[in-house]
Image (cartoon, rainbow over all chains, first blue to last red; front, side, top):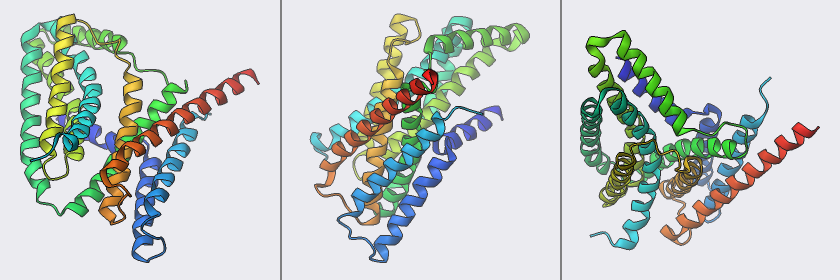
Length: 70
Length: 250
């Protein structure tokens, strides 16, 4: 049982070590897919927008992690 | 038949990403072999490797049956969630906001814990030691399996990804067994930095492919994407370090 518990914990940590970062990634991809479907963004520019948004999400995650704990 | 030019980036990516996990698993397997001998360490590690190989053998063909665009989108999101987590941690470590992972300290700690357990449960010491090796290889290997399945989630690329991962694990374990010491000199954080950027690059590329907004240049866009996240990560690490220095001197 302890192996299964550790396995579940490892899988959870793999994808949600920083829950806000994971939520950010999912939100960016969902928004991009919606924008593409609704023809709100030209398909040619979307990859660059996604790459930039992901870098911004990473920057926010780093800033949150670097803040001294209260 | 996949050309070497197509397979080489996949093999390389799986090799580097799997090396980091193999180093961590080896540290615990080595601790088990030092405390209780080679037999329980080898049995535990081999049992976990067999289980992981079965998972790849079962999941690989199942994944191949999923429509490629949907698969790329899901795998892309998972790669991003996984890779950005690594990259964020590596940036924070490089910036001094988190302590660096110390393989020698991890080895000492594991050895101490195993000795304590062996004294407390003398009759089941070998079993407990074997389970520790099994658990370490299974848990670190789970991440390797995900990397192999994710990087190889394209027709014909599962084999090259598995070869890259297997070569990394074999090389790390062979080196470690030859040295009989934890591989503390391997620059683990730098490797995690590179792997995080690599997984983020693959993740963004596959999300775009999966949602029908492909990158100009096709597969050739992966290398610049990886470089972009590597440079972005380095700049962030520099900014974190500068921020911490300013805070200390204020």
